[in-house]
Length: 322
Image 1: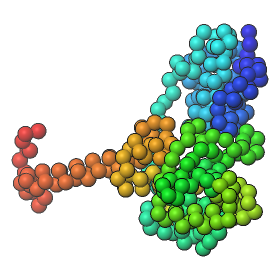
Image 2 (image 1 turned 90 degrees about the horizontal axis):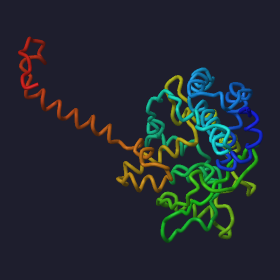
Image 3 (image 1 turned 135 degrees about the vertical axis):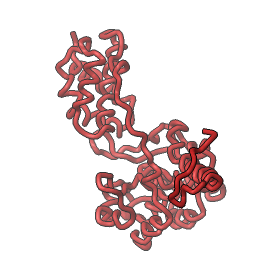
Image 4 (image 1 turned 180 degrees about the vertical axis):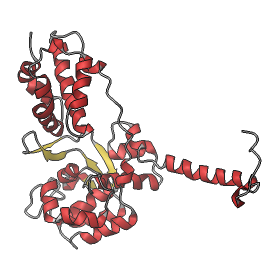
């Protein structure tokens, strides 16, 4: 019988061909640190959903990295099903504990924090333009790096997002489709117009809109190094102990929250940000916070009409009608 390790070696190029370079890097790490040590020697037909659950429980690292490992194992098992080595994918029957619902909006910058970010940037130059483009569009860092002059339509006040410039499987630069492999349009807000005009000056439509000072692609490493980001970010926004410090991706979270605050509908926010599902977009909505505000008003009105001395520390009769 064939082992998981043998399947991985035989079909590795096929598995990688179906995912983005970023996911491929995560798969490579997942194999070396989790999936390989746990399952490489195991015959694929011997693995049960319970085996998958047991290994997931003891894999080291954050939940997101363990999910990456589970995704890789599932991809290998799908290949095994198609090849007739097993009848079903054991990963599909594994019960994985649900994660606590995330709140990406908590990572967003407030207006005051945006002001501090802008003050921390150089007064001019390519790195300032690049960061402001992320802030005002909500695009991913690689999407801003991949923009060309012709992608910005000043007349229509829109930007055509069709590609991303991101590290490949081995760290090499890869220019390819966006994360969701979808082309989308994003609004060109007024504060960004003059920045784009400045960035496009003297360039042709196929030139990079936001290159580095030498004309090459900007990535997270050279951007952070140029702006001394590790020493600057906590002056912009700090988080409680145990949470990650401010990331460049948090500018995308900021843009999502601002879109909702500006009154943009959830489906439109989803289209602008390129989210795969509306459920992801709704995480940025302030619906739950608004529910608490509405509840505060309702409860205050209720208690105002049913005080009966309890606010003064006296005994009161039981509330009726409950």
